[in-house]
Length: 96
Image 1 (spheres, rainbow, N blue to C red):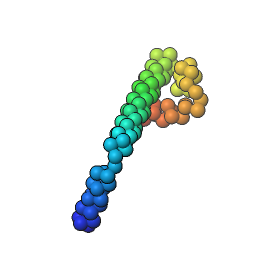
Image 2: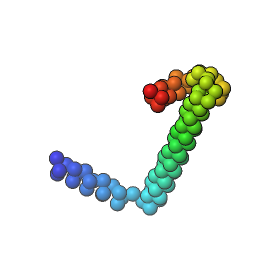
Image 3: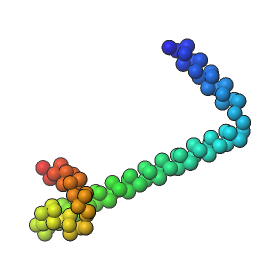
Image 4: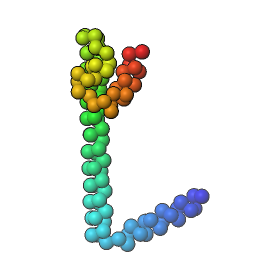
């Protein structure tokens, strides 16, 4: 098993030495672009989580302060009906 892994590593190293400087630059740029894309996706996920957290807090506040039902609170906040089940599940997990 170890011999096979060593052989594969040696083959990979040999291939790496055979690629041109231009190919290395292209590979680096591709890697960098993908890293930037991954970073932006991560930031978007964090932003969406923050928005979701804020909406959950707002729903709970409307329920507590104005005595609205969860459905009425979501309607008041303009949350699309397609997303209602998601928020109901989250809030039920919090309010238990």
